[in-house]
Image 1 (cartoon, one colour):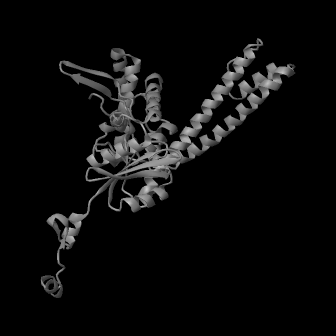
Image 2 (tube, helix red, strand yellow):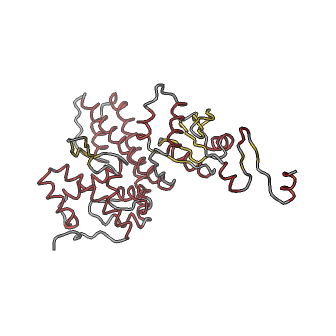
Image 3 (cartoon, one colour):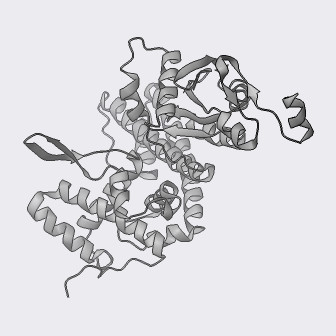
Length: 377
């Protein structure tokens, strides 16, 4: 009778569950009744292991082909109230993150090295256990989220990587040709490009048996150099079309490859609150070990982007070793003083870290490089 009166009055009667627990049906109570679910994904090339946790317990786990669309459908089916979907950094992480986010899945990419230290504590190493461990991290919130780059930035990084790979293959082939010809007493003199090609063909003239072996390698070397030159043109065109890249190229020692790689890695300067944080992000700051009475600074951490860190180190070496009017600046003078006190390699690392800070500040302010900045008055 009471329930009938409530319905007539326009009020929904509360739902009485087992054990005397009563839950209201209003909007506030519905929000309180919603339970968040946390998902861990252990991604591989063919299959992805899935683990779903809710209120401290695993409620479901299984496998799915490594396709973000199929994964998002399975997540919506088994975890309609997913709050965090966690997976580690890896070859497929960029694609997975953007594809899952486009499907409305709250995807989070986390630092693999940080997660691995926790996942190694499990007794049995399996994909299912790794996925369950990642779900634990998602539920506890104990992880380091990674900023996943946009596809445009990854396209630029792919262009630089492909160019470097072709140049590396070209160098290996030329060294292989030199080594094979030394066996027969044919010492190819120093030279690159057309000079190297002409010297090799000159030595092979009249030696048909050896020419049948070396000429295919030489033709492959020439073709790879042409392909690398094509990627060079693409890289220079992309650098000319970017105002940020042209701005960074005003720094002595910073060329098109370093500038465009830096812009692609940073993406938005607002991703870093302080310019000094970029040096630590690139692994150019020293590691510290402190335990009890022991406290010392070690080598640089070498975390982050290895290629960009190497490019900045090369730019620092150029800045410190080239003697021209363009390279004269207060940054070079500071680095030379460090070289006299600490040695060349440590000075180059310090200049590379300072370059990363200066480049971020330039992107943030839009100002060109000031050669006299920081100089004593």
